[in-house]
Length: 483
Picture 1 (cartoon, rainbow, N blue to C red):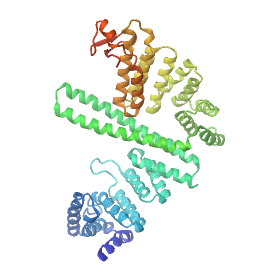
Picture 2: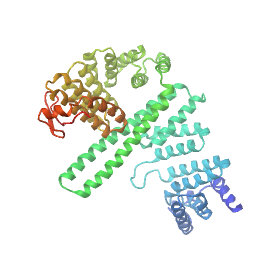
Picture 3: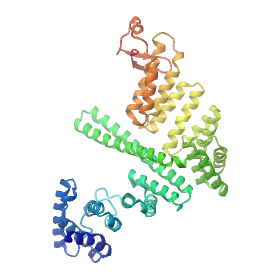
Picture 4: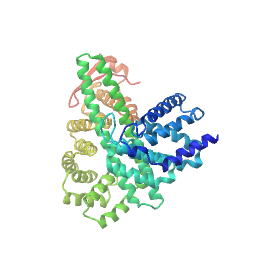
């Protein structure tokens, strides 16, 4: 027990006071390559055994820890595994020695700093990974000791500033929670939460947009492989699509969590109060005006005078798709469909995919309210092309179809539109779990309008038969009876 305690102290404190021998040597294996290779082998084999035991506390080897420490101190360039495995070792000491956890957290911080120093690029891809390492450092500090929120906040803030595209969902989540802690402990003003929320929302939206583009490319490649009957390639693309879809859902979960965490700070009254004061201070701040219009739109606070003032001012200072979108929202709220459509059309020219999607969605709603159902459907399809992972456009198309039932005559024809509508709701929920509840509700509602079995029979049709819905809908569906 005494030996174990001494090793624990050496790990937590000795490492923090040591200067690595590597500073005097550029060799991968340090000044004493034989000792480095020997210790790499000792700790590596012992670590694999510990890993096989699922990192059970009783299975850890103190000889492994000692050898790992020697490698860390004397040949830190030898392998990136030193740092990833080191996290597991420090996790063990933190969980088994809670009184000394801050010393071990400091060791983790030093490990992350050295990893960024010696492995600034990913050995596999050659891409920079410094922001990702910083993000992980901040996450681990916050995870192990939430009282160190200010330290975690500053590190995560630097990571976002360096390269937000490298941040995983867990890092983003920790950053926002640490930001809230800063505000709740009066170490930052309330506006900080709003600013960071907007910043992180854009990061996640960009991640989802990039993943959606990847998915479209993978689907196209898979279709080519299917055409050439290359089964191995098809299987490979299926695996990539599954992984990509999982990552999309993770990002959507992060986005949902950001919204939930922001909710206490997102009442219209609070937002308008904070933003009004800021706009009064700097009325010509374009960045602030964009933030005001974006967040008030997301939180459905667009009826306020502040939103209109900010939208008009933004359009004066910097006419842009973003400014047009904000004015479109205001006219939409006022039920001035034609004026709103004009501005939403201009807003679709934006490079921001989330805003482009919303512009097309709202533009489609304008045409729906003006009675141009076919035009609305075409625009909803454009929205679906902008965000192929979003099921909402298909729900909106389904509602268009259901709304058009009165335009069709005949016992079967007037009910066939509901088959086509339900087809869209089913497609929406199958491609996007986040809209499943909404889609299921519509399926239950509109399935009640299916024709009864006897009407199908007496009109010379049968269940399961294909049916062409004419008119502006012009789609083929499947006959189903009311249950």
